[in-house]
Length: 364
Image 1 (cartoon, one colour):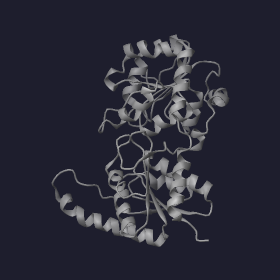
Image 2 (image 1 turned 45 degrees about the vertical axis):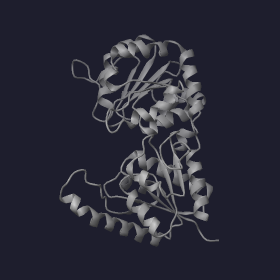
Image 3 (image 1 turned 135 degrees about the horizontal axis):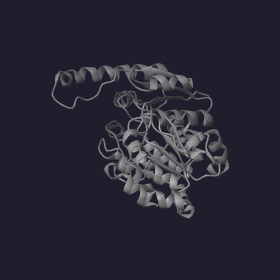
């Protein structure tokens, strides 16, 4: 029997690389004989994350479309053609039966190369507002899956967000007490987790620090993931310490935080929103006010379903926290209702949905 050859394309950020790796792991589970490789660019996070998983990574030039008239705009056509040719060489060498694309600068050249070689393309779009690469690729794709219902892509099917099985298969109720112990928390105490990610932490840190005494007055404990080099400090300049307040710069394995939490305050990147729903965790989303507003769109479905609250960055202040978050921490029934409504929106098998689509298309 001919071995199925699957080539994945995507990268730049963890938002692209993580679902790509989750899909690849699902392909391996469902079709162990498949040969898999990945295409990225030298500048992306994939150069660090992909080799750690054991997959081979081929690189093509990163060719962003210039936003304004410049010398780069004049050079763009030739550079883009070179990237397409490089992608085509890789697909030929890999004898690809199907290409799975998740977006990023690497994808347009790969999609075009696959089209020239009559190799079918399967696409996953992580954001509620699609990026340019997948808007172009979806026009001729054999299958398009999206993380959020109603994503405006031709023929898109709502499949959810491919994610680590440590998260998608997490049993919060069974693992909560142990997760809290491992994080140095009281296993019996209501737990609020705060995380702003690497780029969105500072503003959240300031607001939470201003309301910290209010939060602790509810009897809850706070696990605050501040981000690298963004520790919350007191008036004396020392790292802030309070009984029930636990700071970490980051956590290697967010499944521990999801298991420990009764409520999470976070930015609403596509992965975070999808993971929170998959594990049924009540959330307060503070969309990062950058880009084209995609973070607010990402959160909208879960908020409308009653599984989360949404607040604009500039409105996330001590008075807002006192009015909206303290009642949740003081009334477990409110959190239980949000938990049920969050879990109803969660999809835990998106990785396998995408893998099955790719295997089906590749076998044709």
